[in-house]
Length: 485
Image (cartoon, rainbow, N blue to C red; front, side):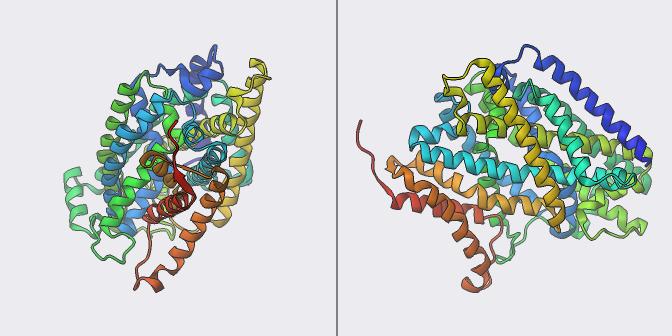
């Protein structure tokens, strides 16, 4: 596809987002930016969160992962349902009952300021790394098929992309993101459905016949029963449950959208609708992956060394102009969905949790708005740097890297919240940062030695659970029975 056409599609879609941002950002305040004035319709939030949960990683990496792991990812998704039920029944009542803007304020109320700062810092680290992965996988496609042709450096491409996100989220914040996410979810899902029909037409097969071919192939294998395999189905299921808890329930980005709902009841309905919708949606992406590999095999197209590149390669080089346009719209939607909410959540957490902007009575409202804007800009620059860095070290499926990193960075959050929710003990607040830092280190040592220590057993995504358990046990060691008030 002509690079100019690709760029025009990008500009057109971005312009549509700016129209939404104009209407949602009018008369906005810091309250609008952080909470959306708590009046978002729950159906809109739930639908938009589907796209936010999927992101560019699902759009490109999950179809590519089918080539090596079949449908094993689907067991992870089924585990999500258990995790989301926990979020709805346990975490959301805590957040709404305490009227939180930043969910990490809970740690301050439960343990103290050092624990509070530690939890917020781990979120900022986790979300920054995760967002850079998600942005990279999309921006890299634009680089390969557009900007490399013109000799534009990757860093300039990233700066342009982040600059546009910065502009349309600058005023409206989470209120803008809630509405732009609905648009982005629509375009992502439409791109997948249209691509499936295009593959069906080009192969001269009905969609039903394609599904049957996929079922008869090795690509749809879902359950791996070898316990030492990282894809062992029980590992996948329980890992999925805890991944949902930490990457949604303990994540400011995802919870900030939930907290814009009018009340707890709406927020719960939002979580349940979104979680059950993810089952058919992820199944759709996995079947797309199987169809892509079947198509490549029938057409004699070589599979790229990085299977993440298969979808963009076929869409932009082999399926024709219309398929390329559909793919690009879905791709750009995925990219924006990954980055805009993250930028807003990082700004919220740093402003409230680290700077204490909401409690600072020495600043005027105008000064608070200016501080928040400076933080917003700083995170845009920081994320851009991480994306550029990640391009230099990327050598495997992004979905695998994303969940592996999550196991190390979200594990301490899992331990902190578990200890707070399920015990009534108090801790030595000053020692909590050391426990939280030591836990990922011990988890890493456990991971690299597990095959030797445990008869060939290798940790997969379930390392997150053990990381949280190590943090929990460390907190138990520095705790005492809470005195009655």
